Image 1 (spheres, rainbow, N blue to C red):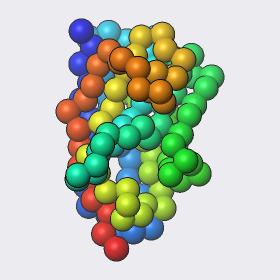
Image 2 (tube, rainbow, N blue to C red; image 1 turned 60 degrees about the vertical axis):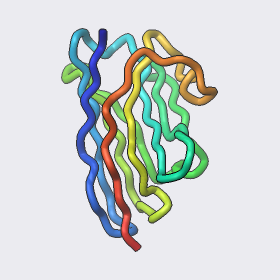
Image 3 (cartoon, helix red, strand yellow; image 1 turned 135 degrees about the horizontal axis):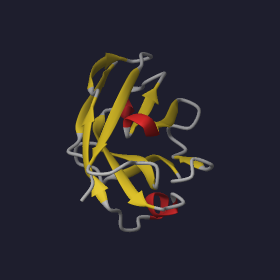
Image 4 (tube, rainbow, N blue to C red; image 1 turned 90 degrees about the vertical axis):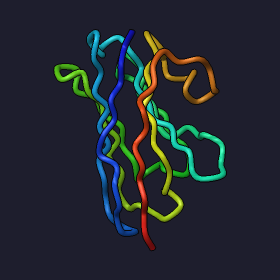
Length: 126
């Protein structure tokens, strides 16, 4: 099994930035699509961003497009979510996830994924 460990959440002022990290153990990450979801209090989990396993395709939710950037470091088996221009409505628990040889569409469309992180809380104050 691939195990994912997420870190980087915290408290930030509106307009500020955070970078979330998701480290994979058990195998290399180069053959996995990697992505992020979030869940705000009282809300359903929503898709945030994903990169296909090849790295050639990325998809972002409209709510974060232009502000968030997903990236990957295969040598470290780690992927990241750089979050800029944060808004109070970005406040949520953020989860990383992975899917083997996925083009990323399963993340966007709600398909089954292979592994999930434990979640990290991001709080954006106004």
